[in-house]
Each structure stands twice: as structure tokens, then as C-alpha cells.
Amino acid sequence: MQSIRDINIENKRVLVRVDFNVPLDGEQNITDDKRIRAVLPTINYLLEKKAKIILMSHLGRPAPNSRQKYSLRPVALRLEELSGRKIKFLNDCIGPQVESAVESMQAEDIILLENLRFHSQEKENAEEFSQQLANLGEVFIQDAFGAVHRAHSSTVGVAQFLPSAAGFLLEKEINFFSQILSEPQKPFVAILGGAKVSDKIGVIENLLSRVDNILIGGGMAYTFLKAQGLNIGSSKLEQDKLGIAGQLLEKAKDKIVLPSDHLIADKIDVSANVRTVEKEIPEGWLGVDIGRQTIAQFKQILKEAKTIVWNGPLGIFEIDSFAHGTKEIAEFISDLDCLKVIGGGDTAAAIAKFSLEDKMSHISTGGGASLEYLEGKELPGIVALKEIAEKSSNL
Ligand code: AMP
Image 1 (cartoon, helix red, strand yellow):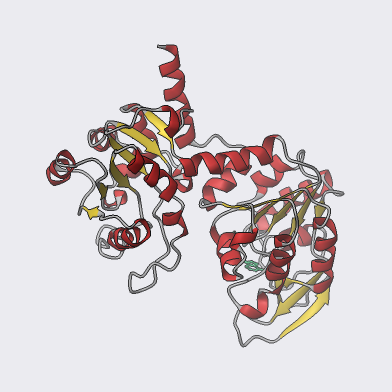
Image 2 (cartoon, protein in one colour; image 1 turned 180 degrees about the vertical axis):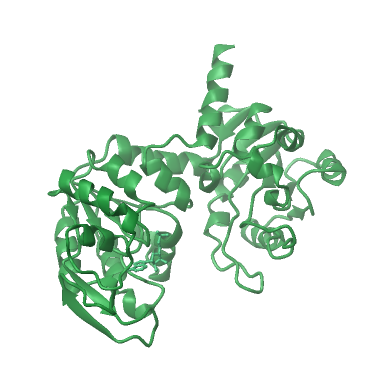
């Protein structure tokens, strides 16, 4: 894969795929601008090289009549504040107006195109749409780690038509995750949580031979506990994953560590009745967080670790009274002197909620992408860059 450093971008029109899929509140205010800040090193480098910068991104999953709700306009304003530069926002990502705005660009101008997903062809990786996007630039830089697990026009299609390379954010993300998979310093401990077992089975299978321990909490723990024959009350259960959960436990008895006690509640609500139980959960109650004993046991294992990767909160951390386990483990690892890599999505949100972002080695900007990377899957947006690099080295 080529790097942005290896490719001639001086004074060129550079089309950059970024991941500006930021969370917005009901009034279109950005509630977390981490993904915008994460792209600034690439933008600043392009400015130094006097490039003409054309940024493109998706935002959410817009339905046909929801343009305003999913407009990238608020992102343009925030990017202006963060970069100290004027950002020209365009109302579309292709078409004659976009083409003429791009043609009149001067060095160091920055354009942000409107949401790519306002065109259904983006997700279809339609060739004509990819070509129209590619026509806007002379070079393509991929910096949207959060989107490279999708084979869309802006992640795969455009790379077929332009000299292409990875931006600094994409490089950084790949460096951390590939270090974890290929040469982790031992002991290597993975912490997995979150709602669904089904999302994490591939990760467990791929990590088992590499890790010393996998600590499991959150909603996904209950399918494993049920597979061991324990009562889990009304806790989260994926019935169709009981078999595979049982097989994984069988295969890795001494590596997988499950919660031994739980905070249980009679409903998922701030006003719920709560108590702590060991092992079995009575009917009518559900596990909402790991218990004290489990927290202590997890800490005991984590304190020896040289590499930690964490994906998925250990309880329903959005409710303060169920956030204790996630918070204590986050605070504990933040003081450890080792490599600490946090998957994106809800885990990143939890770390932000506890103001511990500066204490981690790396917090990924891609939830789905980091999970697929840890599963050992080839990510289409990265494959596209590699194929282009191979082709040009064979010329
Ligand atoms: P995921 O996207 O799979 O990482 O799941 C994140 C979600 O898992 C968060 O919104 C948490 O509230 C939720 N979660 C964590 N622990 C539990 C639990 N014990 N029961 C149900 N949901 C949970």
C-alpha cells in the first residue's frame, strides 16, 4: 500500500475519503468531533504541499427524504473551527456545479462534498458514480478507517481510476491493529463486551491462538454462562449462538474468563431495583454489569498485561448506576504502562464519558472496521489500495 508520503500531491487536486460520520443530537449539533480531529494531520500535510483538497464522506444511513437530517453542513462548520481555514461546502458530491467549483479551486482551498449516501450508487459501488467522483481529483487519498470495511464507490471504486494512497489516520489505525495481531507483547489480554455475541465470535476465534486471556463481560457474557448451564434470568441471550459459545469454552477453557458475579436489575432503567449475585441470576432479573468480585479478578489478570485490546462495554454504561464495571476497568488500565488499544463505537464512547481518552495508546475511529480487522478479515478499502500499489509496481 502506498502512503501519502510516497505519492506526488504537490499542487494537485486531491480527493480525500474521510470518515465524518459523527454523532449528532436532535438539533444537528455534533456531540463528538473526534473523527474530524483525527483527519487534521492529513489535511495539514496536504495544505503544506499546496494541494487543492476535496473531502468526501458519508453520514449515517439516510432514507430518501431525510436530506437535512443527514447533511454534512454542520461538519463543514466544525472543520472550519478546528482547522482555522475556510471550508467551501457543496450541496452535492457529483454534478456540474461540483465540477465547476472544483475546476476553479486554488492551492490550499478546501471543499467538503455533501453526504455520499444521498446517491444510492455509493453503496452499490456503481462504476459510473465512482468515475464521476474520481473525475474530481487527480489523486485519491483514503483516510476513512471507519469505512474501509465497506466495498463502496468512495472506498473501492474511485481507487480504480486514480493514483491512490493511505492518509495518516488510516496508516496509524493499521499500524496499531497489525501490531496487535502480528507481534503482540505478551501477556496479551483481550477484553470483550457489548450487546451481542454474534458480533464477536469471529474476533474470539481469530484472537484465541494469539492471546493469553480473553475477559468477557457485557450482554454477550450471558450466552456463554447459559452455555455452561447456569440460570441467567432475563439477561441478554442469543439462543442460536449457545452451541458455538459452548464449543469456544470447550476449546479455550483456560483462556476465556467469564464474570463470576453480576449486578442485576429488574429492568433497564435508572429507577430499577438492583442487587449483586454470584453465579446464577433469578427469573425476572437481568445482568446489567459485572460485579465487584469479577472486577477484582479482571484487574488481577490485566495488571500483568503488556498488550490490551478492548472492544465492547462491560455493562450498560449509558446508565450511570450500571457503568461501574466499565468505568473501574477503564480507570485501572489507564494507569497501566502497556499498549492499550480501544476499539471504536461504544467502547470509545465509554472511554470519552470517563474522560480517559488521553490515557490510552490508541482509540480507534472505526467500530465495525476495527472488529473486522481483529477478525482477520481483509478490508475491501485496504485491499483496493494494495492492489493499486501492486499494479503500479509491476508496470
Ligand atoms: P456493542 O455495539 O455490541 O459493542 O454493544 C454495546 C452496547 O452493549 C451498549 O449500548 C451497552 O449498553 C450494551 N450492553 C453492555 N452490557 C450489557 C448487558 N449486560 N445487557 C445488555 N446490553 C448490554
